[in-house]
Image (cartoon, rainbow, N blue to C red; front, side, top):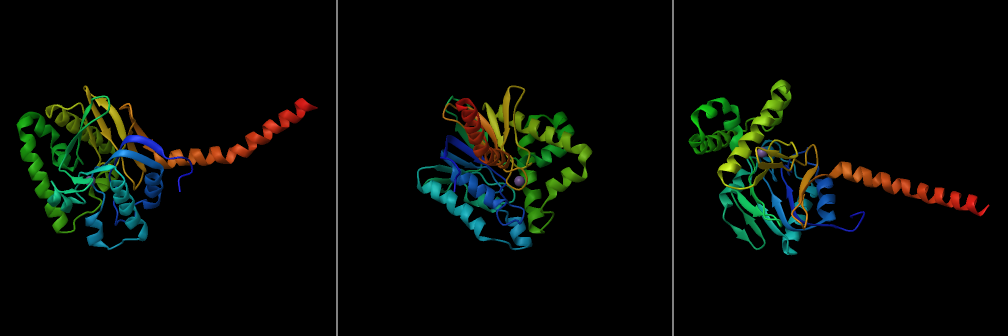
Length: 276
Ligand SMILES: [Mn+2]
């Protein structure tokens, strides 16, 4: 149950939920979904973690409830756009399908209330590009498409052999020194791609690192994840974008509610003193 009246926004972006994986913070996501009313809900990939399910089946009730909550929103006039990622790449076979208010797209361009065009894609397409970024810089932009399809093949292979579920996180954690430059390269690759597509910005997920920043005149947005950071991105009715750190926000709200009686008592004390 929401603690306050619902937050009314124009759009919500979430990704990297990893339903079917033990690390998914489904209860917190449910709390978030119940607290928000939105015209558009963008699911930016890795919503269901088929890699993890195949390795060790896990599906508690709360994971079903997340799907029911999303479908419930679609039933009540929220347009839901699902852009699959690498852990739910099976859903890429359904690209182009429309199920009432739920549509599945490979990528999607959304226009904000203030006219910004945002390209929405998961971002795993850039794993190979980032790892070979130095080579790519020499080859030029024509190599993008080939590398994109190559990465798709690599991912299909990895999936086929149940390889390294947590490959990216492992990559980041075991190579801490390289982690910062990896994230930087990923962000730059996506911003450059967005520029070539002629849009104002990009919204992605995949690296579980929430961020909104300007990269050479292109807006780079990553809506984070619901395994570690519990983050989402909002578009407010005026088109303004905001990153939401849900657990941090809830902690603040709890603190405010806890402090409330104290504030009342202090006022009463003052009133009594004034009266005396
Ligand atoms: Mn991913």
